[in-house]
Image (cartoon, rainbow, N blue to C red; front, side, top):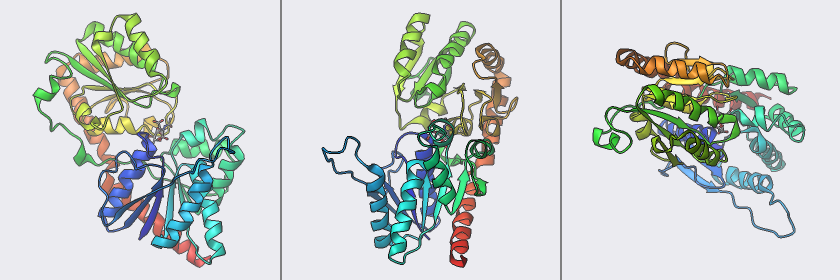
Length: 378
Ligand code: GMT
């Protein structure tokens, strides 16, 4: 199949999922065309089956805001025609499903039919999409997609609650390539992060309010009082600076490393003993799954889709959001006993196997085929 993938090319989970999906589909013989404004961060190899087409928005001084959706929909039209793309898979309702619908309509004028599969990732629904400014456009884009998927049951429920949706929503969870995670690094590399007697605690995110970064610091503060440890903070975003200040206020700045965005999260996770994800909401929590795949237990909130990923008492523990005391207690419970920590590490990796890329990607293939069939009939 020739598949066009539209996504945000950044470090965010939706871009990572879209990129990994495209790469796996290409290995399975499909021809993949990424269409976005810059090369996705995890897309290192372009080859016969993997192509990247950049959307450029020419600067025009008359426009206060440059019209990305317009540029994207025009690019989609051109690429569908040029490469005979059979299906468009767009990640994020706004603006991608919206632009894809415009492209589809333009193509129809030329007698070309291309169906749209839209995957909802979370923030397009729970944070941005339900804002009154965007709600009509999001509702329209979802209802006009030929097939809609969501990355968790919780996100599906939220979508049906917040919007007037007339479409079925298929839950296709995020996935992980287990072969890319696990401890394959040397002790010497670990020594650059912590000494032998210290545990490594990790948080990875885009440091936005929704990630509840102060709780990461506070839980770590409680941990390090009882267990020698260091905190690895990976990612960039508006909450990073306040977090650095909080570390100074608490006197733990020497024990916390702020990495910024990293392409080496497999390595950082490979050395980690515990992962913290106290988010206020999270449609899935891909970073938690990446941690689990690396054999790292997860201390998280119980919001959104996280309980579908992190299993309480097995791969880690869930607490009410903002309950720093409970999260700290759970973290110490795991860290203080070597055998228990080992068992949680094994269970975390086992739980992650449910989301094996080889189980989930065929679900998308089936969806593309069904969508194409459905559209040929109608
Ligand atoms: O919040 C983020 O980390 C970024 C955001 C995105 O749009 O990439 O992540 C959303 O999609 C991910 C992939 O499906 C999910 O794992 C995240 O849980 C989701 N974020 C939120 O719901 C806040």
